[in-house]
Structure formats: C-alpha cells, structure tokens
Length: 228
Image 1 (tube, rainbow, N blue to C red):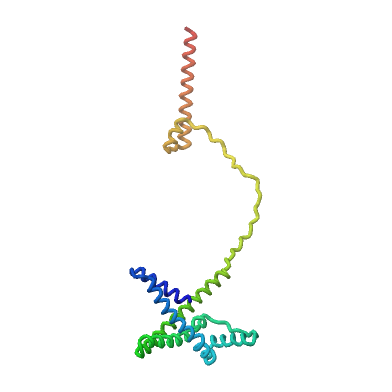
Image 2: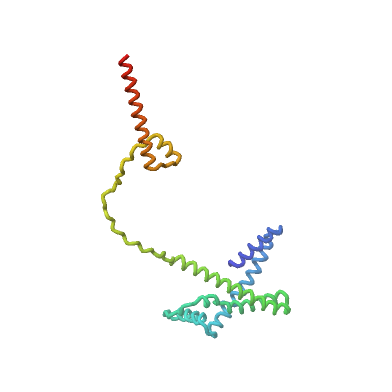
C-alpha cells in the first residue's frame, strides 16, 4: 500500500512542477506501481522465498528455517548471531530473482515477446539494488539505535592528591624608614639623575657652611641695631 501512494505522490508533484494536471499522473502512477509491487511481493514471498529457504545453504536461510521450525513446534532454538555482511545481503537474491520474473511478466504483457529479456534484466538489477539499499539503511538505523542506547562513557580524570597546607603566621616585611631628601635631590631624581654618597656629603657640608655664615651675619646685624 505504501509503494503506490509514494509513487503516486511523486508523480503528482512532478506534474505540478511541469505545469501538468497532477490528478491523472497520480492515478496512473499509483495503479501501475500497485500492480508492479503486488506482482513482485507475491512472487518473492510465496514462490521464490520458500524455494530458496528449503533448497539453499547459508546463514540467512538457516535462520529463516529455524524461525519456521520454531513457529511450527513452539520450541526455541539457538539463533546464530548475524554479521553486517549477513544483514547487507539479506533477501538480495530473493529480490533479484523475483524482480526478474515480475519485470519479465509485466514487460511482456505490455510490449509482447520483445520485452521479455529487457524486463528480466531491468527487474533483476533494479530490485537487487533497491533491496541492497534498504539493507544498508537498516544497518545505519541499527547503528544509530545502538549508539543512542549505549553511549560511550566519558573517561574520568583522576583527581590529583591534595597537598598538606602548612599554616604559618602572616609575615609583614619591615622596611627601614627612608631618610628625607633635599629639594635638589628630589628634582634630580625626577629626571633619573642619581648622585654618589660623597657628592651628597659635600653638598650637605656646603649647605651647612652657608647656613652658619648666614646665622653669623644675622646676629651681627642684630647687635648693631641694639647699639644704635
């Protein structure tokens, strides 16, 4: 049922894009795809599938035989584990043979005997490729479900061992008080000029001598004022 609907919708959308009436295209495509899919699945499920299951070896056919035996007897058996290759090749041979027969029958009915061989070849190739693509999609679906159900654990990083913390009393550095600097020294320090200790001592002595002479002069002037 899904195949005719999908094919009909696809043909209808194609008709809309090409400015053609979508109704007849939808109906025509749905009927043709319905006849083709019904013929194909009937041949595969009721003719080719049972014949291959009963006659061919292989894991997929052995698994299908076990399922039939379980359904008939009701006893559970050990089912072999399938690989990705088994899933990828599942029913590819069945679909190819069924597609060849369905394509040969339908193309012969439409074109006569001249369409038998092209119908056989086209049906076998197309149905085999579609079945393989469906199996590949099934593998991707199983992989996605498996990853979603079993996410990879995030590796935990071991914590570093805690180091013992020593408690010490707070340490406050004691700085010696800086001696006061003269205005000249501050002026030169603004320009990055630094003098030696000897030069600094000579300047202090010169300033002392100037102050002493000034004091002596002021005392002498004061004595003169008193005498007058």
